[in-house]
Length: 151
Image 1 (cartoon, rainbow, N blue to C red):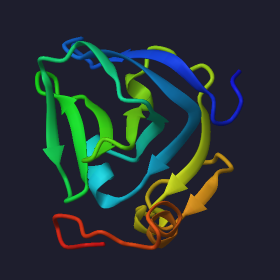
Image 2: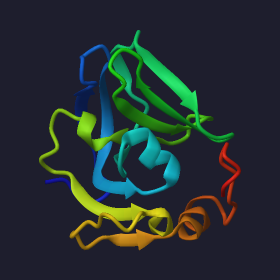
Image 3: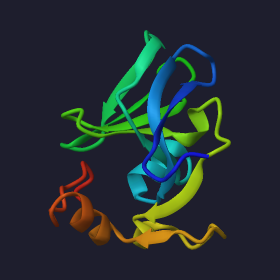
């Protein structure tokens, strides 16, 4: 099992196999409960920070600009939610469920817990961060506006 912060080579693909990739990703996984992630992923977006992927096949890869600062990438053929990235490419996150091997993945944090609906809860002992906590930790306390006008 890798140490926290280790980036291991990982392989993954979408449901139909039209998008296949290799990347280096952390073993630490987070779940994002923000409204955009839940709507896009059909639940909390469970992701690992990763390098920019190298695609073996990406013809079906599509991007949706969900805010002025981030994009969500998915397979245009089967609809699988695959990546979240900052528009400038400085940060990528891959869906844990798109990886071929998840054996060493560790559930470490939950983000935007103040947006999580009450009808589900994870039993894991994780770091819990509200939206304000996330923006304070990762963007110098700036809270960019989403397309829907929320922060």
